[in-house]
Image (cartoon, one colour):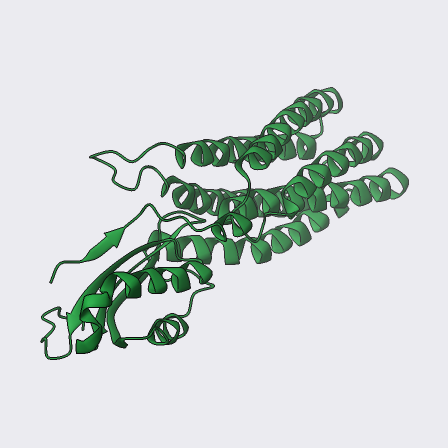
Amino acid sequence: MSAGHDHSHHHHHHHDHAPKLDQVNTAFIVGIILNSAFVLIEVIAGLATHSLSLLTDAGHNLSDVAGLALALLAFKLTKVNANSKYTFGYKRSTIIVSFFNALVLFVAVGFIGYEAIMRFLEPEKVDGGVMAWVAFIGIGINAFTAWLFVKDKDKDLNIKGAYLHMAVDAIVSFGVVISGIIIYFTKLYWIDSAVSLIIAIVILKGTWSLLIDSLRLEMAGVPKAMELEKIKNELLKCKGVLDVHHMHVWALSTTDNALTAHVVIAPEFVSAFENIKKDLRHRLEHLDIHHSTLEPEFVDEDCKQQDC
């Protein structure tokens, strides 16, 4: 029996959960401009004071700017129409970018950790005062940028990634302010390395969940908030539906989810499948699944799919 499918049925509830594109665009653009300016400030201050920690942090912040730019590009690509080569459009680019951003954060942690250990072995003389003032500016810029993403961070993995980048940078800057002040008054240059290692651990903890979540979506796994049993039980509540099997749920992007399933229909309800389908789709939309392909089956039909 042929599948009943229709991908043009976006329900109004979807827009309550999805981040608003205009607001997201503005947040990313403001973040890119502010952080690019801060990278420039750090490079100038680092060169003027021979501070390797400021130059290293400038490199880290530059990777954040690249991450923000990639995430913005991914959001733009989700609005490109589907075509014969890419039937879902370029929605999946948001998953690829969120995974890449998690990897970039891990690489950044590696560099911070390596640099901190090298500094422990050979502490370098740094100007604590300049370090503290430049990092203080960084707290303001990074905290403000993170705040731009707070509202939507739980709605989309890319926004969560951007939020984590900025929040982590604010913590990094706070650590540099503290170490700068201590170094200024005590000349204990190893403090810089100790603070760097603590920061690296904080970054690792925050990034791990982002990496796991994005890897799951990359592997077409069931999105974190979804439970197959819960979805199946909801579909079985529909009048005329006897069973649901061969069910697959995966993410099309960091905000769009899809489902395919075989639906066993009671004999007396076969003629009413169109109405059943509408009811099923309505239930799925409330479960945050907005693209569904539902194939009806009769009770006495033997499903040939291997995993039924």
